[in-house]
Image (cartoon, rainbow, N blue to C red; front, top):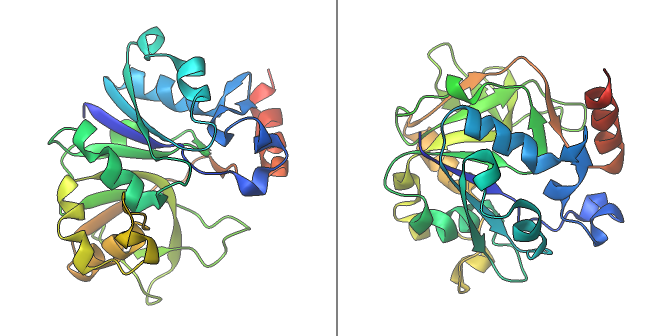
Length: 235
């Protein structure tokens, strides 16, 4: 894999007041900005091009991260305007910067010890999602994973939580207007969630996944940020 997209455009409303002056992916944890953990992991698996989508306090990202050369990366920024475009709109907005090959997507507000090399460089179907055990704040989970590694949106099997990490083909966004009915989809640029496109792919058995049983944290509140910082700061 050569390209990766890091979602970093969110407003971080649940993290206020910490995010009043700092975007959530730039909040320090374990001695460095949260997003830097991702950049180091990407550099270690020979990803060379990273797109970071931005909105809230966007100017702080190039100030903090530069062009990525300190990690051996080339970082490009996809500014979404003052209002974030959601996950689907954000991916669509960044698509021209990601090249024709499948690309790795990472939410900028999570931390994990997952090895990104376990994700298939050429996912079967439209994509491959890394799934994790359901955290306490999301007990119902998102999707089910069967024994063949195919994802389903149902309750016949135990549900897991989407980690915010996955490999995607750009074809996932093909004909997206036929699937998405978000009000923001008519705006310029379009603003919509990725989930309807994932649901379409699942209905066609075109979305696969794997279960990461290691550490993973959705850094969604100041308390979870503090707990993660304490854990990562231990000698």
